[in-house]
Image (cartoon, rainbow, N blue to C red; front, side, top):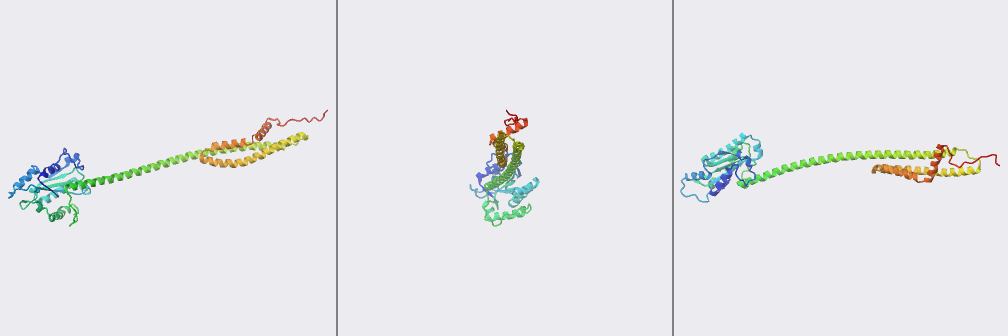
Length: 359
């Protein structure tokens, strides 16, 4: 409950009876919904005029003091969940029941106004009345501490139970909020609710972003793995081809040497010595080639394994073959010449005459 003096009445009326043009300091007020506000009790006079007329009719023996309380105001409402479960008609009936309770307790003729505000966070009733008791103006007598406690108990019995509302704790030492404090409390509650909603939305949005990022990362990883597998397969194929070519060349060299070894030994000493020397050379070349082949095959396999991981199989394989072919260029040239001469039908050795007649 809030108590108002003479100078407070007009501002309260402006705030209670506001229209769409009212400039509000209260951020809870939504001007686009102000037209939805409605009166349960509305006088044809201003608040001040109605109060003055009522006081004049009392025929008080003394003049009303300047600091006298002329109007007491109550704000009646509940939380958003309560009103969310009521239809529009049920909401109106709830506020009618509240107004009827105050009219029966303090006299309908003393009620200045009863107006429901629908343009704030939750619907609520502003009920203003003149504190008249036993023909006298006395807010102190009418609304002492015991009377306010009794008011809460009786209001719950007459209205609260009907609408399944819980009464506040009886005998509580909690401070009763003023209208301004009540509205400030509602603003804080609304802000906290909106902040909690935004936080939940932000968390959901963040979870969606993380899930999307993880999905994209998995897709990119799978694509990268696919490309790596392709590169490794290509490098392996190229390395296998290079190894096969090198083996084919070495096999040709070995076969050429074997073919030469199968030829009959010449009878003449000089020719025999020349062929023996050549065979030794070719035999050494063959031995060196075999050693190179055995060693380089092992090195080539190890290098190919590294190349598969580094996606450099092609370059490494070709380099190893080139190194192997260039390790002993002279020996390979001799063997290569021998092989080519055999295929062309000419002998790589100097020809010797076997003239048996002589001079």
